[in-house]
Image (cartoon, rainbow, N blue to C red):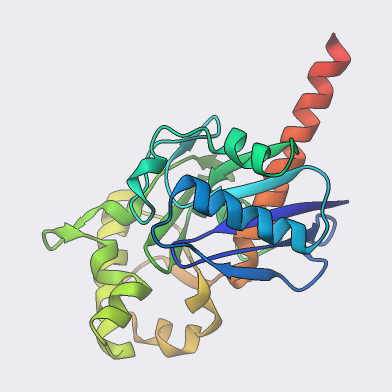
Length: 257
């Protein structure tokens, strides 16, 4: 079964049709730059551009880098603050001419994909996926069940929002070597481990393509640390999974009427 997934990030918006039997993209993803400022109308237009690139006409899932409840945006740390309170699902659906749209937190989407098809598959206990990119996203699982919208990138670390010190954006802005950045990531992981005692950390985001650059440098963390198997496609896959689940729920409700 194929469903479309779109992953909205602070720097780029990417999407592709997804084969949910395999948990993989059907075609090479299409990516456009996130508009600056990243306003609701501007971002919705870019989502439309990505979807129309594939001539897609059907249900789709869309991730957003912030807290999402019922398709409504509740926080927007790395997007324009005008997003807060916006019904993103309805906004994007209008942009696409009424297509069914499901919106969820970006890290939650990536986490669900990794737990189903990737590094977390079959793992019990407490698993934490962390996406390192423009910010830090988190997806928290206990025995395979998602605790939605955990947003652990905003924990305080040395008096600062953690993602301002340990994200990939922080590495680039401060021109940190891999060694110095890995030390910051290590401090962050140790702090999260103190709070949640996970059995497994899954490191996602674009940096998961280069695990050899930093993971061997991280010490003093009890939990196992592995790169995301789906790498930076996890959000797209998870978005498509969410759209499929929403479609199934809608079908059940229709059958009961």
